[in-house]
Image 1 (spheres, one colour):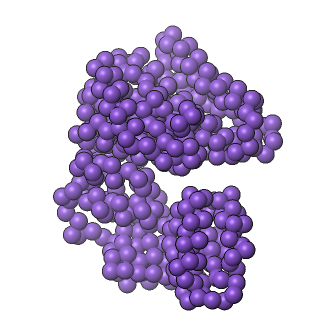
Image 2: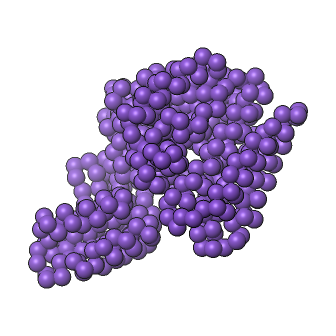
Image 3: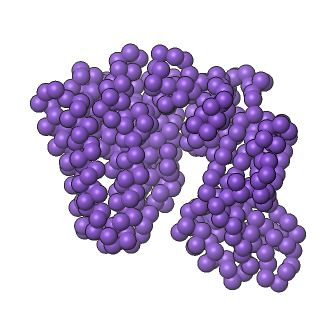
Length: 421
């Protein structure tokens, strides 16, 4: 049993979908669970529909129609036979489900609306790929991930109920595998009430990891548009270096600080069962990629450079000018936990406590509203957080020269700098 994950770029158009089918054919598609993300920029387009709807802009329906036409065009390029009609009808049903939900929805909970609409992107892509794979002789079962992956009802950041999920996966999927491989959605879970949740942007990697864990998979493979794991983003740094192997620990550190190669929560489930994670290129699918495992040799790693843009620095000080003490910190941490806003960097001084976070307007506004009676709060926007693992002075100077540095922290292996670029 192996688990494959294909991201949005790998299924962005008809040619890409054909390429996925080729990869499956050449890698013995049987005994596999295949997790697929929404096609291309579909998630962004669905987010736009949510925002238009939430703002009361009737343009959401025209945008939804355009999304249907876009996917229909992909289907038409895929088929040369009558199977096109089934594929178009299958996608049309999913589009109509979105339309009916928005027309009859009475909730003003943005996160709830977001998850019900945006999760549809994964259902559209998996439907198209599953239909086409069957048409090409690759017999498969399309599994609704909500039947086996259960979360709480924290919309947009669902927390997985591992015990219930593991039992459901182990009971259902092995039986389905007997009649062909399984295709399912990434990024999506199911609340106790039966509604869709999402696991956070790029959460399809996490979905694949959960499935691999529950199925005791031999290996998990993430297919991407790069040759494997690089020490930095090759789109920003053409001199980025390929990393052939990493330990689980190093991969966890990279993802914790924001490396986008895999979702931050991906590693731990497979580490718990010592399942290797392979990152390979769907463009050069014949080449070996990077492997994350327990026994990798990482003694010669180059500096690993990670950027997180659009950061906000919030600084809290007690209104009576007293020192920041444990009772102050506990209140601040509790408020961030309640709003599920992850802290990317923090620094404590005598009379202030500073926290850097991703710009998430609604959550930041809520936190400030909840804490403004107890603290004086200052805010700096449009910042960048640079993290360098295995740093040296040369790379520090190169990346921070002439920058306005607000916060700097370092340990033996990791340097973080919050600055205006």
